[in-house]
Amino acid sequence: MTGDIPPSADPNRLPEIGLAVAGRGGGLDDLRSLAARCRGCDLWERATQTVFGEGSSDARVMLVGEQPGDQEDLAGHPFVGPAGKVLDRALAEAGIDREQAFVTNVVKHFKWRPSGKRRLHERPNARQVRACRPWLDAELSVVRPAALVLLGATAAKSIVGPDVRVSDAAEPIESDLAPLVLATIHPSAVLRSVDSEAREATFRRLVGDLHLIADWMRSTGSADLDPATPPTPGSPP
Ligand code: SF4
Image 1: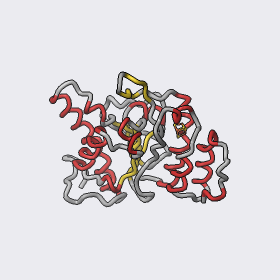
Image 2 (image 1 turned 30 degrees about the vertical axis):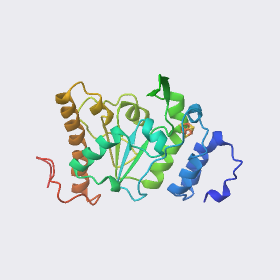
Image 3 (image 1 turned 45 degrees about the vertical axis):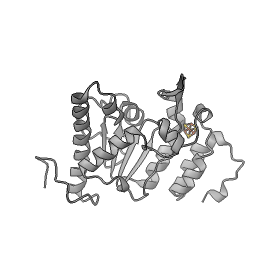
Image 4 (image 1 turned 90 degrees about the horizontal axis):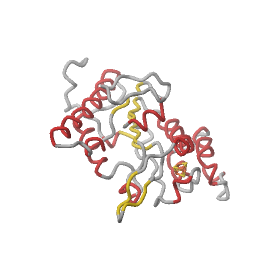
């Protein structure tokens, strides 16, 4: 499918080209190879590589964070660093198999600033988010998830609008991006908690919101979930 995209295609236009490829039936591998050359904004300049979304095109749940972190940038895979490990635990507790989920980010390159030998995360600006949006739309059009989970305020606001709040308990968001759209905290919020008590409470909040997804998918028959995981107390059988 990417064979008809010449290697000389303007790398600044690859987000739009990628979205068009998805519209013509291109798959995730096509998109990933195009995104690897993307120069749609300036974030590629200081990053190691593009970190495209990962998971099956049949995934029923898509989870979207803000951007790859330091370890993701080096590994080339999303959610493999400390926040990714928190997400793995939360998904497991909620009965959602990460292997059955598609994980990605609003922007596909790591934005950072130096601090001594460390690379500190910097929030992508509106122009960078806008430039990268066609890649997310392309992922959505290929995967067509039943449930879309927005992780953290930056992802939620950039995808569904500035009024969305992640500080409140998650409620379905009206959106045509997926049958169920929910916003919750980013797993890195667990790591930033001030003490172990706050960390546990924040983790429970994340698990609780993911449980809502699992319960909804179970009740609508949208996915094969881990049958060993009981539904949230009070949820429909
Ligand atoms: S952040 Fe997105 S738009 Fe910008 S260069 Fe990377 S892949 Fe392209």
